[in-house]
Image (cartoon, rainbow, N blue to C red; front, top):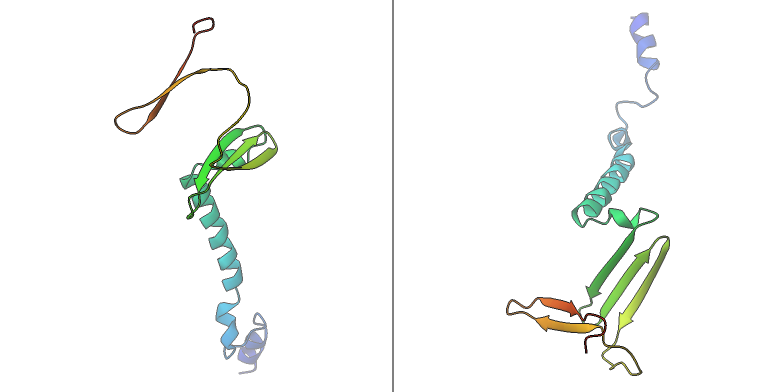
Length: 116
């Protein structure tokens, strides 16, 4: 009987009566789950370019109130711009014509230089 008592004392330090011994690694499991969820979301929305140093990416999003925001990433610089409903003023140069097709998509046709 003396042998059995020694092997029981050499355990991991947790007794069988400790209710917290079963949940000791739940925090680590939660961290692994969160990292896996973030990787899955990046893969689903193809946002790997946000992590690449020399990539260029443009994202447009619309809020519930109807405001649009354009997020542009060029290299290491990320710039967010809010789109307003105000008309643009100033001088410029005509670059081409945009057409809306029957299915709702837009097509841009650039003008050839010298043709006006």
